[in-house]
Image (cartoon, rainbow, N blue to C red; front, side, top):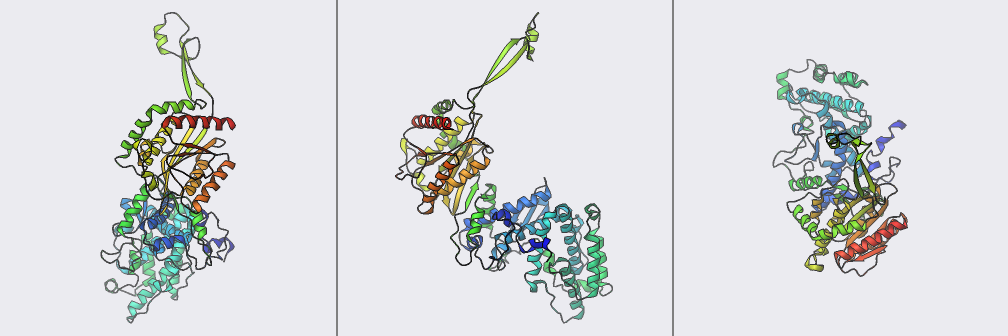
Length: 595
């Protein structure tokens, strides 16, 4: 193999799925159990949907590059969802996920699905409308036409986007070479039928297989060379002017010559009829049986669409990937950490407004406690001999040169701060807290207090995340500098358990990566009880120590009974809003002065 083509034995998606890059030699790619396969084989539909949503998000980002502003949506195929260019929709077969080939890991599967999506995107971008609207003369002509068009669109896309050539190769290898019996010619008793299918099959494999397939019929090789000479050129502008319709017609005539009459071809069956339907990934209604791996159930499709609407992102894909790489002793995979932006329901704004009204008397007090921050005060000066022209003074003054004004911006004490609030939204937060409200309502009120107080302060950036564990670690992005819809804070609910260690870790990663450089970081954790036993308890202490070494301050606000000490640098037990304001202001001022 050419050393420059070493990527053919490695995964193209591995570098961003696991972070290991392409340097692995694949030696440990034996019969490895992969987390996604275990989850997809389980009966937990939420787990299946999370894996498939993450994959669709990754594939969609690649497809978007081909289409630019003309965005297409990418789905898995179901009985209600199929490829439809008019609706800007691409449907992918779920077979690589549901029935993966031996030794295929997640990056390999994503390579195939990406190539599958890019193939459809290439058709949408470069195929002429006549390719879809014109009816071929007979089934053999349809096969020739489709093969020529697919070679054309894939090569043209590869000329514009050279990095995508590998995805097309991976897709063709999966489709045409893993199962040699799938497209192999099957001898027929009827000599005419046998010869027609033999030539069509060899033409298909010679142009689409990645095994350097050599046709046994000399005429087929001549036609293949004809097509390659016309299509496989390096000038994209010249290639775009090629008429694939005329080329396919010429290839058809050269391939079959005077061997058949059109009326005979209509009546003879083609063993490649399934090839013409490939790309739709749509089974007939009622045909989906236990072995149907192409379509996904409608309820799973709906769940995936809901998760995609929430902009779900798997944050720890690299860790999960590493968990399944040892075939002898695979460690248990860590919980999947999923960031999502909850879609607001009708009551979100009302719940947030109720929280804001509750804490309204304390908002100004907390803001005043931040008097050290960069709070702007604008003073306007009028009747000056120089500055900006004051039109009112110009019209009012009889004889004077004092027609100018100047605005002076006074900033108290310039201090920058990046602050993240991490709110426990586990099921235990439904229990009552002080003042006759539940703990989740109290946490929501505190989040509203901090956001309303910090928002007008120019030098402070605020993030708010909710967290719980239900199948995966759900990190709900409720507020951030890029998500300023405060009503989304009303979506904080209470379900699942308390993965506090994982939540602290990934909230801190978001804060560090999205926050400003050289700016003081503060993480405020609002919880009511103990984290989940086992690794999560240990992880809390580890992450607090790590953040302390990085210079990030941690403050814990307890809204319930918390008997254990998990290493937070500072703690504020709940008593009332005024105490929280005073204690937080005192702590924050002390932290900044220590900087």
